[in-house]
Image 1 (cartoon, rainbow, N blue to C red):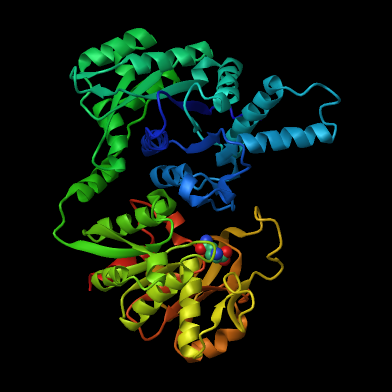
Image 2: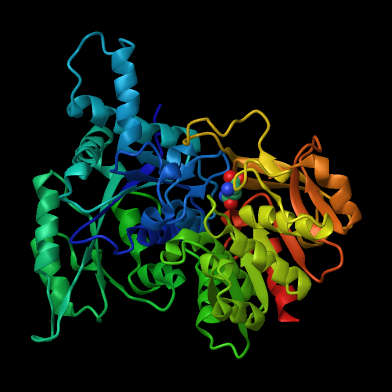
Length: 538
Ligand code: GLN
């Protein structure tokens, strides 16, 4: 089933976590894509959760959702933004999912009574998955990022599967890239290569010889350090590529390619006819990002997972892209929803200062009244407002409280007994269902009203956007809310679900039940974010 022409690049990490393996993988994807190759990427996560869908945003950051409704690791957001592909359920595999499949097979007798073992049963499953990703995507290159650090117990089956994979499909089709760290010791004024040597040795012990070594460092990497690593790791010097801390993540592909010509090494090793890479768009973007724009754009992000900025990474990237588009720089103002809820005046002051307010997605009761207050503030003060999923629900609740003159309008998520459930559970689902896998997930079509701000932004009537929620706008309130000034700007094609609301008497108040941030791209900001920033400029 494997696509013959597909080339595979494994990316592993050494020394420690947090070096930016996801960004490095995504950047390599962007470089190959710029040369006209099709690229598919996947992340192998060593943890035992089936998927990141139920993991805490505090611990794991954002859950990124693909078109086909898979809840995935936030690295997939980087892949989509850098490579500009639409990834699928095959882009994120966890150890939990592999074991689930193998154990189900064992119970149903698929293994004919054999002893089930990590090698070959788990490793075979991993290899089959990679092959399936290649055959379904038909991509020229499949990038496979192995989560964690070489040496982690959890990562062993993936490394073993990768080693076997190369044996199986030929060394001319598989490339290993290893990302490590060069720590700088101030006392001796030196970059230390020993941790890199050790981590390459760890790879050797698993039968893997890296082809390219990317070395992260906060200091310029010296020639001596490169020579030393090349010698110990048995690669040529040109394959030891410095990955210094750059001004913006979008500079990473430029560094790898323009400075170190990484594509040449990849093409040579994988015996691919070389093609010219074109990174001009990225270079222009970086120029815009690093320009010290006179105009700052203060935007409030009213969140509750504020301690971990990764929880809102796609929203922040979408805001930044829209700002680059308008040649302004984003000044993100973190507003704490729980503090707003407690009437903390310093949080209110922040709302007064910003040019626009974003209420992003979220789950659970905590901080919701604060988000409702933020929507109220935006409505009353005519500040541009962008609501994303929960941000639409709180805007609906707020408007209902005001328009229907009732304080108990609510979502049944926050008050199951409310007499005015303007947001309620998705028909066909019950709150009692298991937590994992009961959401409305993935891409759904939406029809835009001709007279809406959304239509003006998208310049078309039918759009497709990604969802991740359980609750919906309650149609029983539609008429009354519309009469009071709410505009239903987007509906599902069967007109049963409200996908976008707007306020008529307001310069820019747009809130969507879907998550537009997932489809925003650095080089192509999302229309709603773009117009939200435009409105905030005024
Ligand atoms: N908690 C809300 C729901 O489940 C909103 C979810 C979200 O913002 N992603 O419908």
